Length: 114
Image 1 (cartoon, rainbow, N blue to C red):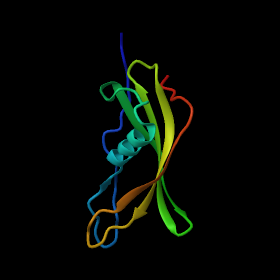
Image 2: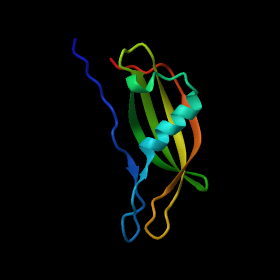
Image 3: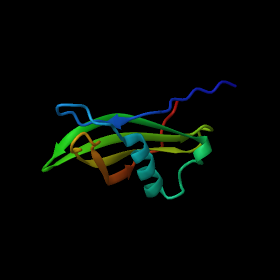
């Protein structure tokens, strides 16, 4: 049997002024938000694939937000979901990375991996 999978391995957001700041790791932040919001209903960590997609930076009123689409599924294809994590973004000062705070986490239909 052949198994193919796509997994996100790194995702960082940088502030750019006169220099490029160290990146804020939004892959880790998205995974933490999904784990907290889904509370144990997600596929087991050792059998899970997380893919980020449709990443966007937007201005919503006075806030700058980072919208991160997520797809999570098991290697066995029997469980998974799609969703969206929205972070508020605060630019870093003096070369520090931007700060991300989870604003919302939404889940949609089961993820399609075919």
